[in-house]
Length: 180
Image (cartoon, rainbow, N blue to C red; front, side, top):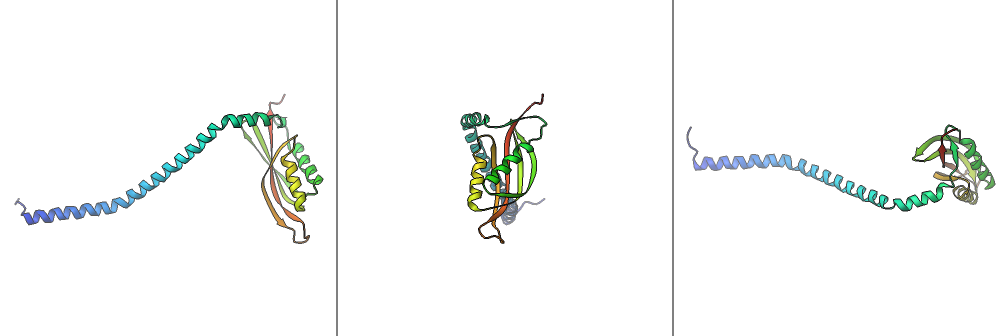
């Protein structure tokens, strides 16, 4: 094997630099994208951690509010159907406020710790704006029940000017105790 001339050594070094730059040119954009993705994930996790720490810091306050409201929640035995309790409350409150509920459905129960929620879906209601406002106020401010309107759609009634129509979803909160 013959020794490389200084010119060949320079050409070989230049070739090595070109190959190195080519490899870096192919690798760097992928590495940069991976770095930016990892950084975005890191920032999202930091924000999530900060939110969770804020919620944990509020736990005593939230617990105190829960203890104050817990006594207002109705209690039913396990396995008992509760729609016969909630539907008349919704219907009577609607009737008292001149809101006509034409079609309704019972959704499912969901349990969150000690609290269970039943979803009532009103698929068709009709009433004036002031009647609707009073109905919503009465539903959310009852002393004998804990009910919350989670979704509400409103549209004008094409046939009757001054009347509104729509749908709403009502969640009713209560607790269950073991059946005797």
